Image: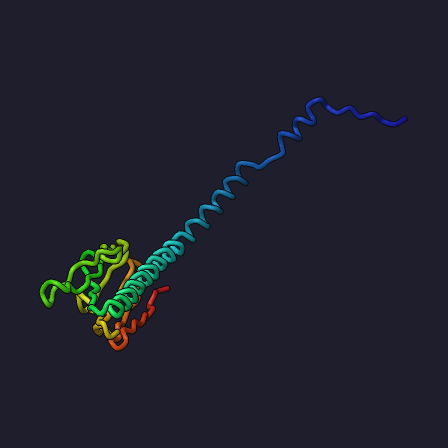
Length: 171
């Protein structure tokens, strides 16, 4: 005769209680996530500051191209003015009605003061770069540097207003 097995009434309940993760398994997963986060944070921070630096340089190059084009089209010199201590810059245009050497801040959005991010420092030889109606500009260089030691140099060649960007971003 076949044997009939009776299961205890709590058998299904016990197996249901055992499904899931143990506290040790959950702690190991949390530890793994923590280690990955700690190891990757400096890399993300460095990538962010490098991106900030590249973006600041790109904005400054756009401003110089705009100044050069506007000087040629309007047949009047423009100056890109820098405040190295505050990390800011703006455009001014030669005042046609005032003194021969007077410049006034442009009334367009390019005349507004552009502030660099706090993590970026700006250094240079001259506090202004003049863009002339014939297309050339002053010869000088600017260096933008971030807190991580990455830097980029903008060289203004003068002839034809050429601007060269030299990358020296640290890895």
